[in-house]
Image (tube, rainbow, N blue to C red):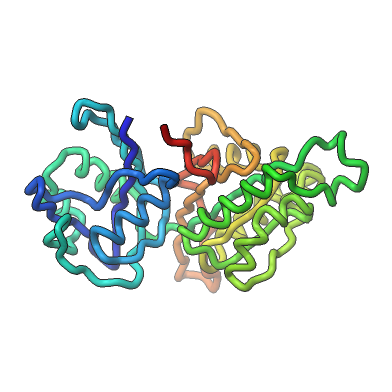
Length: 304
């Protein structure tokens, strides 16, 4: 199978469409994964190579499957905000156009790209994004003689944390939160160190803090999501499935199941509440979950 990744790169009012002289077609920026590369990293790299712009990932859009050169090919697409950069023609792409979505859909050559643009247009581009991480591996509780709050990451857990340190910055996080457990904090400490921020304790999102008052825990996560920038939140396996499933139900989002492996991440996207200009309140409710994408590992799949 050929694995590839791409993005709908957007800036105010328009999206990027590129012309590839090799195929003489107009398409969204995308390309094959390099060996040892994750899908999100490939999406960011391909956008930079084909458009010249740094991409800040947003919500997951969809997977497209088709036949290419006699092999099955799958392409995963994200929404991505255009950061710094500038386009320069090259051998792979000789022209870039920034177009409104309807004009971009009319220009792209493939029906698959039109379907991706349709999925992108179904929600606002600037959704609030939150990265909900289950702590990395920390060995078995029965084998740790000390306080369970202090149970450290295992060697495999530290490898997972290193992978998250590389993966999560692709969404441009600005804040890092964690349940007050050593394993939760250490899983995302590297991300916080690279940002130059502290890991903010979230007792409501620990197993002991969440279940006595689920509503308070859910409200706390929504408060974090409604804040500035993109937050990273590290929590536990006894909390995350219930949080994601409940928010999905409240948002009318169908999730067939809610897996939660150690070191995994749920990429959650929320529609912010609309301002209510008739009152002094700034909003009319809580953010509503409109997209949930599960990433079971931060490590690249092995290549053969």
